[in-house]
Figure 1 (cartoon, rainbow, N blue to C red):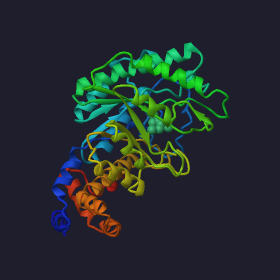
Figure 2: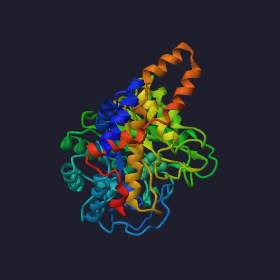
Figure 3: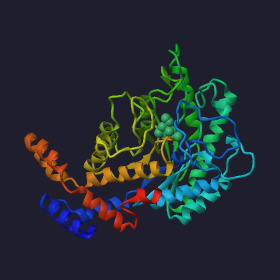
Figure 4: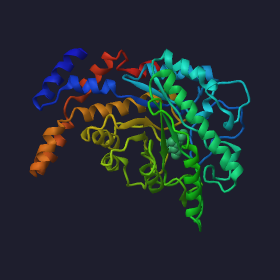
Length: 405
Ligand code: RNT
Ligand code: ZN
Protein backbone atom coordinates (compact mmCIF):
# COMPACT_ATOMS: atom_id res chain seq x y z
CA UNK A 1 0.00 0.00 0.00
CA UNK A 2 1.38 3.41 -0.83
CA UNK A 3 2.09 6.20 1.66
CA UNK A 4 -0.99 8.25 0.76
CA UNK A 5 -3.40 5.34 1.17
CA UNK A 6 -1.85 4.51 4.54
CA UNK A 7 -2.12 8.15 5.53
CA UNK A 8 -5.84 8.22 4.63
CA UNK A 9 -6.47 5.27 6.96
CA UNK A 10 -4.53 6.91 9.77
CA UNK A 11 -6.34 10.19 9.17
CA UNK A 12 -9.73 8.50 9.61
CA UNK A 13 -8.60 6.71 12.75
CA UNK A 14 -7.30 9.90 14.36
CA UNK A 15 -10.44 11.72 13.27
CA UNK A 16 -12.62 9.37 15.31
CA UNK A 17 -10.80 10.53 18.46
CA UNK A 18 -11.03 14.18 17.45
CA UNK A 19 -7.51 14.70 16.09
CA UNK A 20 -6.94 16.58 12.84
CA UNK A 21 -3.83 15.02 11.28
CA UNK A 22 -3.54 17.69 8.55
CA UNK A 23 -3.40 20.37 11.22
CA UNK A 24 -0.78 18.42 13.17
CA UNK A 25 1.36 18.12 10.04
CA UNK A 26 0.99 21.83 9.34
CA UNK A 27 2.16 22.74 12.87
CA UNK A 28 5.09 20.35 12.58
CA UNK A 29 6.12 21.90 9.27
CA UNK A 30 6.13 25.37 10.79
CA UNK A 31 8.11 24.53 13.92
CA UNK A 32 11.84 25.10 13.52
CA UNK A 33 14.34 22.61 14.92
CA UNK A 34 17.81 23.99 15.57
CA UNK A 35 20.41 21.44 14.53
CA UNK A 36 23.74 21.64 16.32
CA UNK A 37 26.68 21.83 13.90
CA UNK A 38 29.06 20.20 16.37
CA UNK A 39 27.82 16.60 16.01
CA UNK A 40 29.40 16.58 12.56
CA UNK A 41 33.00 16.93 13.80
CA UNK A 42 33.09 15.96 17.50
CA UNK A 43 32.95 19.59 18.74
CA UNK A 44 36.23 20.53 17.02
CA UNK A 45 35.67 23.64 14.89
CA UNK A 46 38.01 25.43 12.50
CA UNK A 47 40.37 27.50 14.56
CA UNK A 48 44.13 27.38 14.33
CA UNK A 49 44.72 25.75 17.66
CA UNK A 50 46.31 22.78 19.33
CA UNK A 51 43.99 22.51 22.35
CA UNK A 52 41.65 19.54 22.17
CA UNK A 53 38.08 19.53 23.44
CA UNK A 54 37.98 20.77 27.05
CA UNK A 55 35.40 22.21 29.40
CA UNK A 56 34.29 18.94 30.95
CA UNK A 57 32.46 17.65 27.90
CA UNK A 58 33.64 14.74 25.76
CA UNK A 59 32.98 13.19 22.40
CA UNK A 60 34.19 9.60 22.27
CA UNK A 61 34.67 7.23 19.35
CA UNK A 62 36.68 7.42 16.16
CA UNK A 63 34.31 6.65 13.35
CA UNK A 64 36.06 7.49 10.04
CA UNK A 65 35.18 10.31 7.63
CA UNK A 66 35.31 13.22 10.03
CA UNK A 67 35.36 16.28 7.72
CA UNK A 68 38.90 17.44 6.99
CA UNK A 69 38.15 21.07 6.24
CA UNK A 70 35.33 23.56 6.37
CA UNK A 71 34.16 22.90 2.79
CA UNK A 72 33.85 19.20 3.49
CA UNK A 73 32.11 20.07 6.75
CA UNK A 74 29.55 22.15 4.89
CA UNK A 75 28.98 19.30 2.42
CA UNK A 76 28.25 16.96 5.31
CA UNK A 77 25.93 19.55 6.81
CA UNK A 78 24.10 19.93 3.53
CA UNK A 79 23.72 16.17 3.23
CA UNK A 80 22.28 15.96 6.74
CA UNK A 81 19.93 18.90 6.17
CA UNK A 82 18.63 17.31 2.98
CA UNK A 83 17.48 14.25 4.95
CA UNK A 84 15.68 16.16 7.68
CA UNK A 85 12.13 17.31 6.91
CA UNK A 86 10.49 20.51 8.13
CA UNK A 87 11.78 23.92 9.10
CA UNK A 88 15.40 24.00 10.16
CA UNK A 89 17.99 26.22 11.77
CA UNK A 90 21.70 25.44 11.93
CA UNK A 91 23.35 26.12 15.26
CA UNK A 92 26.94 27.38 15.04
CA UNK A 93 29.61 27.81 17.67
CA UNK A 94 32.11 30.67 17.54
CA UNK A 95 34.95 28.22 16.87
CA UNK A 96 33.39 27.35 13.50
CA UNK A 97 34.48 30.67 12.03
CA UNK A 98 35.53 30.67 8.39
CA UNK A 99 38.71 32.66 7.81
CA UNK A 100 42.39 32.15 7.05
CA UNK A 101 43.39 34.92 9.45
CA UNK A 102 44.71 34.00 12.85
CA UNK A 103 41.86 35.32 14.95
CA UNK A 104 41.55 34.88 18.68
CA UNK A 105 38.14 34.60 20.32
CA UNK A 106 38.16 38.23 21.43
CA UNK A 107 38.62 39.37 17.82
CA UNK A 108 35.79 37.62 15.97
CA UNK A 109 33.55 39.71 13.72
CA UNK A 110 30.55 39.15 11.46
CA UNK A 111 32.82 38.96 8.39
CA UNK A 112 34.36 35.75 9.74
CA UNK A 113 30.92 34.15 9.46
CA UNK A 114 29.88 35.56 6.12
CA UNK A 115 30.23 32.18 4.40
CA UNK A 116 27.86 30.71 6.95
CA UNK A 117 25.29 33.34 6.13
CA UNK A 118 25.67 32.46 2.45
CA UNK A 119 25.28 28.80 3.34
CA UNK A 120 22.11 29.55 5.31
CA UNK A 121 20.67 31.57 2.45
CA UNK A 122 21.39 28.82 -0.06
CA UNK A 123 19.78 26.21 2.15
CA UNK A 124 16.91 28.48 3.17
CA UNK A 125 17.49 28.04 6.88
CA UNK A 126 18.03 30.28 9.91
CA UNK A 127 21.14 30.32 12.11
CA UNK A 128 21.71 30.24 15.86
CA UNK A 129 24.94 30.96 17.67
CA UNK A 130 27.06 30.21 20.74
CA UNK A 131 30.16 31.76 22.25
CA UNK A 132 32.88 29.10 22.67
CA UNK A 133 34.11 29.42 26.26
CA UNK A 134 36.11 26.17 26.30
CA UNK A 135 38.91 24.49 24.32
CA UNK A 136 41.12 27.55 24.78
CA UNK A 137 44.23 28.32 26.91
CA UNK A 138 42.21 30.90 28.86
CA UNK A 139 39.66 28.29 29.96
CA UNK A 140 42.26 25.80 31.19
CA UNK A 141 42.06 26.90 34.84
CA UNK A 142 38.43 25.86 34.87
CA UNK A 143 36.96 29.36 34.97
CA UNK A 144 35.99 31.88 32.29
CA UNK A 145 33.28 34.49 32.99
CA UNK A 146 33.61 33.77 36.72
CA UNK A 147 37.42 33.71 36.82
CA UNK A 148 38.99 35.79 39.55
CA UNK A 149 41.68 37.14 37.24
CA UNK A 150 40.27 40.20 35.50
CA UNK A 151 42.45 39.75 32.41
CA UNK A 152 40.92 36.34 31.77
CA UNK A 153 37.40 37.36 32.74
CA UNK A 154 37.56 40.43 30.49
CA UNK A 155 38.83 38.32 27.60
CA UNK A 156 35.71 36.16 27.83
CA UNK A 157 33.41 39.13 28.33
CA UNK A 158 34.77 40.60 25.10
CA UNK A 159 34.33 37.27 23.31
CA UNK A 160 30.70 36.92 24.35
CA UNK A 161 29.94 40.56 23.50
CA UNK A 162 31.21 39.89 20.00
CA UNK A 163 29.07 36.77 19.62
CA UNK A 164 25.99 38.89 20.30
CA UNK A 165 26.95 41.18 17.44
CA UNK A 166 27.43 38.19 15.15
CA UNK A 167 24.14 36.64 16.24
CA UNK A 168 22.41 39.94 15.54
CA UNK A 169 24.04 39.97 12.10
CA UNK A 170 22.66 36.46 11.41
CA UNK A 171 19.17 37.59 12.32
CA UNK A 172 19.36 40.73 10.20
CA UNK A 173 20.78 38.99 7.16
CA UNK A 174 18.43 36.02 7.24
CA UNK A 175 15.24 37.57 8.58
CA UNK A 176 15.11 34.79 11.16
CA UNK A 177 15.88 35.64 14.77
CA UNK A 178 19.07 34.04 16.05
CA UNK A 179 19.40 32.69 19.60
CA UNK A 180 22.83 33.22 21.12
CA UNK A 181 23.29 30.69 23.90
CA UNK A 182 25.92 31.20 26.58
CA UNK A 183 27.27 28.11 28.24
CA UNK A 184 30.43 28.28 30.35
CA UNK A 185 32.23 25.31 31.93
CA UNK A 186 33.19 27.15 35.14
CA UNK A 187 33.36 25.10 38.30
CA UNK A 188 35.39 23.19 40.90
CA UNK A 189 36.37 19.54 40.95
CA UNK A 190 36.34 19.51 44.73
CA UNK A 191 34.30 21.19 47.42
CA UNK A 192 34.68 24.94 47.38
CA UNK A 193 34.75 27.09 50.50
CA UNK A 194 33.31 30.11 48.74
CA UNK A 195 30.40 29.26 46.47
CA UNK A 196 29.21 32.83 46.35
CA UNK A 197 32.18 34.79 44.98
CA UNK A 198 32.30 33.06 41.54
CA UNK A 199 28.53 33.57 41.18
CA UNK A 200 28.89 37.25 42.02
CA UNK A 201 31.58 37.53 39.35
CA UNK A 202 29.44 35.67 36.80
CA UNK A 203 26.51 37.98 37.53
CA UNK A 204 28.81 40.93 37.05
CA UNK A 205 30.17 39.59 33.74
CA UNK A 206 26.68 38.91 32.39
CA UNK A 207 25.46 42.37 33.37
CA UNK A 208 28.41 43.83 31.49
CA UNK A 209 27.77 41.60 28.44
CA UNK A 210 24.06 42.47 28.28
CA UNK A 211 24.58 46.19 28.96
CA UNK A 212 24.30 46.91 25.25
CA UNK A 213 20.60 46.54 24.42
CA UNK A 214 19.84 44.84 21.13
CA UNK A 215 16.88 44.54 18.82
CA UNK A 216 15.15 41.36 19.87
CA UNK A 217 13.68 40.79 16.45
CA UNK A 218 17.06 39.70 15.19
CA UNK A 219 18.69 38.29 18.26
CA UNK A 220 17.94 36.97 21.72
CA UNK A 221 20.28 35.91 24.52
CA UNK A 222 20.05 32.59 26.35
CA UNK A 223 21.98 31.21 29.33
CA UNK A 224 22.47 27.48 29.88
CA UNK A 225 22.71 26.02 33.35
CA UNK A 226 24.43 22.82 34.43
CA UNK A 227 24.82 20.64 37.50
CA UNK A 228 28.27 19.15 36.93
CA UNK A 229 30.88 18.38 34.31
CA UNK A 230 34.03 16.29 34.11
CA UNK A 231 36.36 18.15 36.46
CA UNK A 232 33.58 20.32 37.89
CA UNK A 233 31.83 17.57 39.82
CA UNK A 234 31.43 19.48 43.07
CA UNK A 235 30.41 22.93 41.97
CA UNK A 236 29.29 24.72 38.79
CA UNK A 237 29.04 28.50 38.92
CA UNK A 238 26.23 28.68 36.35
CA UNK A 239 23.79 26.42 38.16
CA UNK A 240 20.08 25.96 37.48
CA UNK A 241 19.09 28.20 40.39
CA UNK A 242 21.62 30.86 39.44
CA UNK A 243 20.37 31.27 35.88
CA UNK A 244 16.71 30.84 36.78
CA UNK A 245 17.09 33.83 39.06
CA UNK A 246 19.19 35.68 36.54
CA UNK A 247 16.59 35.44 33.75
CA UNK A 248 13.79 36.37 36.12
CA UNK A 249 15.62 39.57 36.98
CA UNK A 250 16.84 40.47 33.50
CA UNK A 251 14.79 41.44 30.46
CA UNK A 252 15.28 39.66 27.17
CA UNK A 253 17.51 36.88 28.44
CA UNK A 254 16.00 33.39 28.36
CA UNK A 255 16.87 30.14 30.10
CA UNK A 256 18.31 27.18 28.24
CA UNK A 257 17.35 23.78 29.66
CA UNK A 258 19.64 20.95 28.56
CA UNK A 259 18.19 17.46 29.09
CA UNK A 260 21.52 16.20 30.43
CA UNK A 261 22.28 18.89 32.97
CA UNK A 262 20.40 17.73 36.04
CA UNK A 263 20.39 14.96 38.62
CA UNK A 264 19.99 11.57 36.92
CA UNK A 265 16.32 11.17 37.85
CA UNK A 266 15.42 14.80 37.18
CA UNK A 267 13.83 15.61 33.81
CA UNK A 268 13.41 18.88 31.93
CA UNK A 269 9.92 17.92 30.73
CA UNK A 270 8.68 18.63 34.24
CA UNK A 271 10.36 22.04 34.39
CA UNK A 272 8.95 23.66 31.25
CA UNK A 273 5.56 24.68 32.66
CA UNK A 274 7.16 26.49 35.60
CA UNK A 275 8.77 28.94 33.19
CA UNK A 276 5.65 29.22 31.07
CA UNK A 277 3.65 30.10 34.19
CA UNK A 278 5.73 33.29 34.32
CA UNK A 279 5.44 33.84 30.58
CA UNK A 280 9.11 33.10 30.04
CA UNK A 281 10.48 32.04 26.69
CA UNK A 282 12.74 28.96 26.80
CA UNK A 283 15.52 27.41 24.77
CA UNK A 284 15.86 23.64 24.93
CA UNK A 285 18.91 21.50 24.36
CA UNK A 286 17.24 18.20 23.55
CA UNK A 287 19.84 15.58 24.37
CA UNK A 288 20.16 12.12 25.93
CA UNK A 289 22.13 11.62 29.10
CA UNK A 290 23.21 8.05 29.78
CA UNK A 291 24.28 7.87 33.45
CA UNK A 292 25.85 11.30 33.10
CA UNK A 293 25.77 14.26 30.69
CA UNK A 294 26.96 11.97 27.92
CA UNK A 295 25.20 13.68 25.01
CA UNK A 296 24.10 10.49 23.25
CA UNK A 297 22.05 10.80 20.06
CA UNK A 298 18.41 11.75 20.76
CA UNK A 299 16.01 8.82 20.53
CA UNK A 300 12.26 8.60 20.07
CA UNK A 301 12.13 7.75 23.76
CA UNK A 302 9.90 8.51 26.71
CA UNK A 303 11.60 11.72 27.84
CA UNK A 304 11.81 13.18 24.34
CA UNK A 305 8.10 12.46 23.92
CA UNK A 306 7.39 13.92 27.37
CA UNK A 307 9.23 17.14 26.44
CA UNK A 308 7.19 17.52 23.25
CA UNK A 309 3.95 16.62 25.02
CA UNK A 310 4.65 19.38 27.49
CA UNK A 311 5.19 21.97 24.76
CA UNK A 312 2.02 20.96 22.93
CA UNK A 313 -0.16 20.48 26.02
CA UNK A 314 0.89 23.93 27.27
CA UNK A 315 0.19 25.36 23.82
CA UNK A 316 3.70 26.83 23.86
CA UNK A 317 5.14 26.18 20.41
CA UNK A 318 5.82 29.90 20.11
CA UNK A 319 7.48 30.11 23.54
CA UNK A 320 9.86 27.16 23.35
CA UNK A 321 12.85 27.18 21.01
CA UNK A 322 13.73 23.57 20.21
CA UNK A 323 17.47 23.05 19.86
CA UNK A 324 19.51 19.86 19.84
CA UNK A 325 22.70 19.06 21.68
CA UNK A 326 24.44 15.72 21.30
CA UNK A 327 27.74 14.50 19.91
CA UNK A 328 28.74 10.92 19.34
CA UNK A 329 31.94 10.13 17.45
CA UNK A 330 31.43 6.36 17.49
CA UNK A 331 28.89 6.25 14.65
CA UNK A 332 28.50 7.93 11.28
CA UNK A 333 28.22 11.59 12.20
CA UNK A 334 25.82 12.53 9.39
CA UNK A 335 23.57 9.62 10.39
CA UNK A 336 23.74 10.74 14.02
CA UNK A 337 22.69 14.26 13.08
CA UNK A 338 19.81 13.05 10.93
CA UNK A 339 18.63 10.45 13.42
CA UNK A 340 18.58 12.78 16.41
CA UNK A 341 16.83 15.51 14.44
CA UNK A 342 14.20 13.20 12.99
CA UNK A 343 13.55 11.59 16.35
CA UNK A 344 12.95 15.03 17.85
CA UNK A 345 10.49 15.86 15.08
CA UNK A 346 8.83 12.46 15.42
CA UNK A 347 8.30 13.10 19.11
CA UNK A 348 6.81 16.48 18.29
CA UNK A 349 4.44 14.95 15.74
CA UNK A 350 3.51 12.24 18.25
CA UNK A 351 2.57 14.97 20.73
CA UNK A 352 0.64 16.94 18.11
CA UNK A 353 -1.51 13.87 17.44
CA UNK A 354 -2.92 13.77 20.95
CA UNK A 355 -6.52 14.88 21.69
CA UNK A 356 -5.26 17.37 24.28
CA UNK A 357 -8.54 19.15 24.98
CA UNK A 358 -10.40 15.88 25.45
CA UNK A 359 -7.76 14.60 27.88
CA UNK A 360 -7.80 17.86 29.81
CA UNK A 361 -11.57 17.50 30.09
CA UNK A 362 -11.24 14.01 31.58
CA UNK A 363 -8.68 15.29 34.03
CA UNK A 364 -10.82 18.21 35.13
CA UNK A 365 -13.73 15.85 35.72
CA UNK A 366 -11.50 13.71 37.86
CA UNK A 367 -11.77 10.77 35.46
CA UNK A 368 -8.22 9.55 35.95
CA UNK A 369 -9.17 6.00 34.91
CA UNK A 370 -9.98 7.06 31.36
CA UNK A 371 -7.08 9.51 31.32
CA UNK A 372 -4.61 6.74 32.06
CA UNK A 373 -6.22 4.12 29.83
CA UNK A 374 -6.65 6.38 26.81
CA UNK A 375 -3.13 7.79 26.98
CA UNK A 376 -1.97 4.17 26.78
CA UNK A 377 -4.32 3.44 23.87
CA UNK A 378 -2.74 6.34 21.95
CA UNK A 379 0.52 4.40 21.81
CA UNK A 380 -0.83 1.92 19.29
CA UNK A 381 -2.37 4.47 16.93
CA UNK A 382 -0.85 4.44 13.38
CA UNK A 383 1.49 7.33 14.07
CA UNK A 384 4.12 6.01 11.64
CA UNK A 385 1.79 6.40 8.65
CA UNK A 386 1.44 10.11 9.43
CA UNK A 387 5.19 10.50 9.81
CA UNK A 388 5.87 8.83 6.45
CA UNK A 389 3.34 11.07 4.75
CA UNK A 390 4.99 14.13 6.29
CA UNK A 391 8.39 13.04 4.91
CA UNK A 392 6.87 12.57 1.47
CA UNK A 393 5.26 16.03 1.59
CA UNK A 394 8.63 17.48 2.53
CA UNK A 395 10.42 15.62 -0.23
CA UNK A 396 12.81 13.85 2.08
CA UNK A 397 13.28 10.08 1.90
CA UNK A 398 11.36 7.89 4.32
CA UNK A 399 14.27 5.47 4.18
CA UNK A 400 17.03 8.03 4.75
CA UNK A 401 19.53 5.44 5.94
CA UNK A 402 19.85 4.07 2.43
CA UNK A 403 21.17 7.50 1.35
CA UNK A 404 23.72 7.71 4.15
CA UNK A 405 24.91 4.15 3.64
C1 RNT B 1 27.76 21.53 27.65
C2 RNT B 1 26.56 22.20 27.11
C3 RNT B 1 26.77 22.96 25.82
C4 RNT B 1 27.67 22.24 24.83
C5 RNT B 1 27.78 22.92 23.49
C6 RNT B 1 28.82 22.33 22.63
O1 RNT B 1 27.48 20.69 28.70
O2 RNT B 1 25.54 21.28 26.96
O3 RNT B 1 25.54 23.25 25.28
O4 RNT B 1 27.25 20.92 24.64
O5 RNT B 1 27.98 24.27 23.68
ZN1 ZN C 1 23.74 21.97 25.98
